[in-house]
Amino acid sequence: MGLEEFKSRMLKLLREDEEFRYAVAGLIGLDEILKRLDRHEAELVKLRQDMVELRREMVELRRDMVKGFELVNRHISALGAR
Image 1 (cartoon, one colour):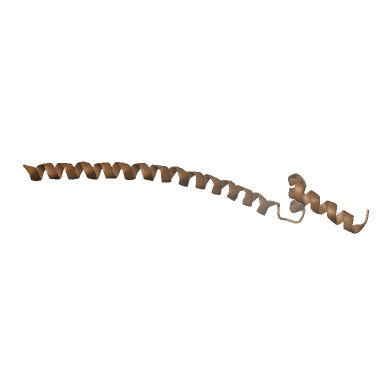
Image 2: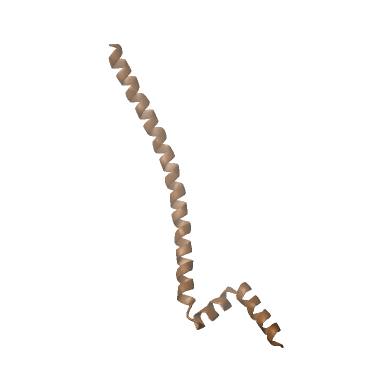
């Protein structure tokens, strides 16, 4: 096996085999950084989901506020009519 073929196989393994990629990263001291990045990515996904849920709640709260303001306006109008 020539050097170019060896490089090609190594690069293919690094691209396609996550376990091998982490083993190599560990040997060169990057495994902890990669693990942290994976944790951060998972946390970002969770935060995004939380934001979507909060956005839905905000829409609901806004609807409730509009209804409440309409009710207050009706009461004020009714008091003015008396």
